[in-house]
Image 1 (tube, helix red, strand yellow):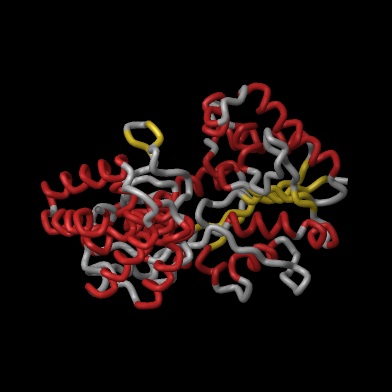
Image 2 (tube, rainbow, N blue to C red; image 1 turned 60 degrees about the horizontal axis):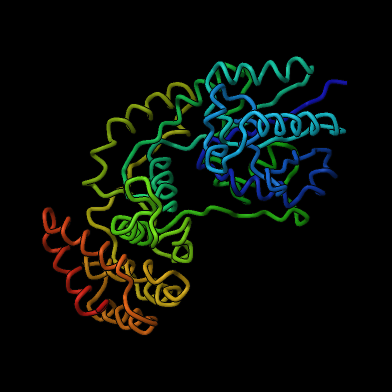
Amino acid sequence: MTQSVILHVGLHKTATSSIQKTLVNNRDALRDAGIGYGAFTNFRGDDHRNHSLPFYAGFAQDYQNYTHFVRHKLNPETERQRLLIQIEQNLDEASGPILFSGEEISNLSIDELSSLRRYFEKRNIKLRVICFVRSPYAMTCSDGQEWLKTGRRYRVAHRQSMPAVKRLGTVFSSAEFYSFKTACVHPSGPVGFFLDLIGVPPTDKINIATANEGLCDQVVRMIAHINDIGPIHIDGNPSSLRSLFDTSPLWKIVGDKYQLLESEYGDIEQGVTTENKLMHNMLGAEYCDLTIPLYKVPPAWSSSSIETLMEVLGKVSPAIAAFAVSHFYAESIATPAQRDLLGEKLASLRTGPTPDAMVTALDSFIARKMKNNREVAIGLADFKNNVLS
């Protein structure tokens, strides 16, 4: 009997984390429906719900320089072989269709994807490739948020999806592409849409998970400010003030939907317009941006958002708390009374003198702002002298 594999390849920023979390949390329900979800472990023995690692490391030609191997100082040959063995084991142990999900698969080159296709063909495996595609402007906004979550300085950059779509379509002639916008209107969201695609309709027995949810505009711009003062890496070296995902308590603050400012959009307008045309021609209108919503100025903070921020300031590091509050002294995004309340809250959290590294980071930022935005610099100096001191 011909074995069948469902290969979910992303793309990035199309609820892949939520889909993978749901799949791994509902293995029994999937099994009851006749579908297995691939099981992998990392070098520590932890379960890998995202299958990007084994498939990217297993089929990328430049696997020796794969970020995961370098970051954890792993032997590329040994680890790659271990992961390939796990793919084989999953296939050998499957009693029916098996599902693998990894968005990094879409980043493989045409030659690498062809190697992956031949790998399954040699085993007489019937392959079904599923790919969600986000519209260009929506993708840009989502990708920018992820960039900030990892502690890097704010950027407005258009991340293209069409090169991956073309590669996948070239190698897998029967690849199925679906509009992420369409998937989102499913009663159970994009996860429910995906479950319907694989023949496992969402029911009360399926616990649909959410992961990696988007940030509101207010939080995006506050984290951008935090990262601008003290990014997670300085000249390639880790900052003593930061750690990965250290702004996560702030992510749940509710506010306005994140979108670019009119002054920011010009940097990517041509790229977004061009990709919308390509996407329309290759996939259809439902994959494209119908509108490009932009702000003239950043939206102000509401009273409820300020209250939530007050609650979570004690859950972040002193540096993150101080840089977050300084945002309200640098920009006109709240009333003076709200700003002063935040300053008082920050003062109440202080347990000792302000670390030198924090003062140095703030001084350096003020000096930079003095050159291109004196008003912001003056506000930050006020914060440093009257709140932080």
